Length: 335
Image 1 (cartoon, rainbow, N blue to C red):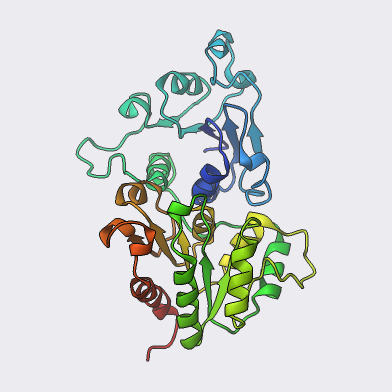
Image 2: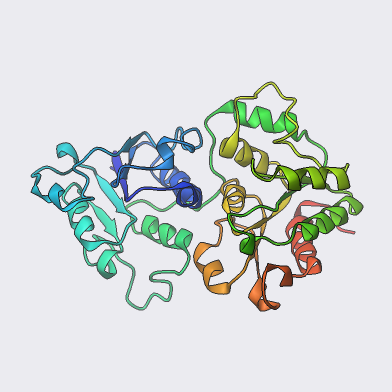
């Protein structure tokens, strides 16, 4: 029986942490009775910071104190991780030296490092998906090699009941909500705001309610959208609920669970929508990056700019609208 599990990583900044959330949840559902430790070997992870509230109940502890194998000097210690030993270690990084260190603490070890050389289980050589392109698919592959049948990636379970209560207050039952997240870390990754506004107008005409998600540095865009679309909602900016301390990714993921579908660029909000398993139209610039960083939503439409032309603006509004209709139609009455 697996009583203790350690996931071994080098650490997570916000983007990494959001992409991995469905994996974190799947580990918990695969080993529901186990104590799950997350080792951020380089000492930093958003699971001990901005995403701590999201992974509450999924991760029991975060390990950051050396020796963790991050540095060569750690190998001089005779007892990795302070002498602790785990029934199962899932190694998500690919440095063979560090994998050797982590393996010393494992009764059973799962790792793709060195073409699964150190792993106690490995996919068949003729497996066409032996090591997939997508980060999320690679994590799912590692979990599938463990001793228990792997739980599929699905919506992340949020332990804080206030998150669901806040989301219901902000997006009450009734309307068909469509999430729209126009932001991204760089302008080159953004589908034009004008296109999001046109898409939102089309959703209003279809009897749906657009729900915009803007970051704190996108106030000007939010004001423009609010002025043009009085029928749209801006739940993060228009707080009237009694749960004002529920904010950030915790709130976005809770809100996303109430969406019929969503549209987002290749950026954090898209992975938050995927963490809620909201049906998602994900907009990308290049197919290679789309294949690697696709969100883990179980119902996903990938639209890639280079399939249509040059730059994000090449993705036609009509194509995104059609993708949304395909995502929403199973949950609505047919015409």
